[in-house]
Image: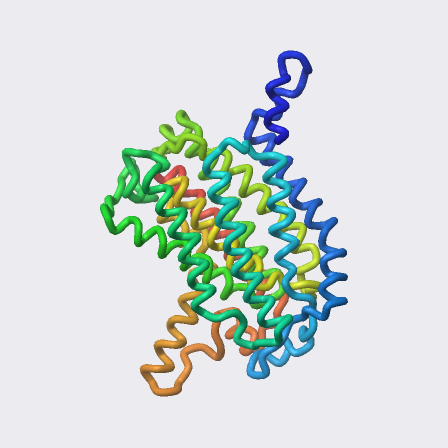
Amino acid sequence: MFYYLSNLAGSVSGLNLFQYITFRSGAAVITGFLAALFLAPAVIKKLTIFKIGQMQRADGPKSHLSKHGTPTMGGVIIITALLSTVLLWARLDNRFVWLLIFVAVVLSAVGMADDYAKLVKKNPKGAPSWLKFAGQILAAAVVVGYLDAYPPNEAYAAALSVPYLSSKVVLSLGGFYLAFAMFMIIGASNSTNLTDGLDGLAAGSFIFCACAYAVFAYAAGNFMMADYLKLIYVAGAGEITVFLAAMIGACMGFLWYNAYPAQVFMGDTSSLMLGGVIATAAICVKQELILPVAGGIFVLETLSVILQMGYFKATKGRRLFRMAPLHHHFELKGVQEPKVIVRFWIAGIVLMLMALASLKIR
C-alpha cells in the first residue's frame, strides 16, 4: 500500500523512497517484527485461557515433559503479522506477491485444522492425513498450474538453473518439471513441520534460509544484476524480497517468545506454511536447486526420519538414530536443548553463506 505513495513524489519530497525495494524490505522486517511482538502477548493469553496447549509424547525426551501445556497454535502470530505487513509494504499489483499470499493462507489453514483437531478436539492424530495432504496438493497444484501457464521466464519455463558453475547452465526437465515443482512445495512444507520440535529451531532456521532467498529474489528481479551474476532474469521477482522480509520480521518477533524456554509454540499453523512459502519463492525466482543448500537443516531433519524408518523396517526393529528427527537424537545423547538449537542455527548460517556463495561461483 505504501508503495503507491511514491506516485506523489513529484509534489511531496521524500516519497520516492517508497518505490525502492531495499527501503520497503527493511521497513517490512521492522514492521513484521513489531507486529508479531505486539500480537504475541494477546494471542498467548487467549491460548492459555482456552487451554490450547502442547501435548507431549510419553516416549519422547524426558526433558520435554515440562513443556506439556505450553500454549500452541501460536503460528497465528506469524501469519497475521506477515499478511498485515505484506499488505502495507509490497506492491499489490505483483503476481508473485499474491501467489505467495495464497500459499501462506492455504497451508496455514491446513495447519490450523490439524492443530484444532489435536489441541481442541483432543485427537492425538490431529486432522485426517488425507485432509492435510489434500491441502498441500491444492496449494502446490495451483502454484505449479499458474506458473506453467504464466512462467516466471518463458525461455526457462521447465528448466532448472544449475548453481556453482562458471557459466549459465540450465537443466531442462520438460514435462517432468511440473511434478518436480509440486514435490518441492509439498516436501518443503513437511520438512519444516518435522523440524519444529525444539524451542525456536524451526523459526530460527527459516530466517537464515529466507535471508538467502531474499537476496536471490532481489538479484533475479534486476535485469543488469541477473545478467552479471548469470541468474535467470524474472521480471517482478524483486517484490518477493519484500514478502520474505515481512516473513523474516514476523519470525523474529515470534522467536522473541518462542526462544528457549518457549512461552508459545507455532504448531502446524505456521510450520507447514513456512516450507511451502520458501519452496514457492525458490520456484518463482528459478533457483530451485539451491534450496537443499539454503534449507539444508530441513533436508537433514527429513532425511533422518526417512533413514530411521527405512533402517527400522530393514533390520526388523533396530534404530539408526536414538530418535528421529535428528535434533532428538542429539538430545538423547545428552546434549542440552539450548546447545542443540544454537548449533543447528550456526549450521543454518553456514548453509545460508554457502548458498549465497553460488552468486559469485559462476
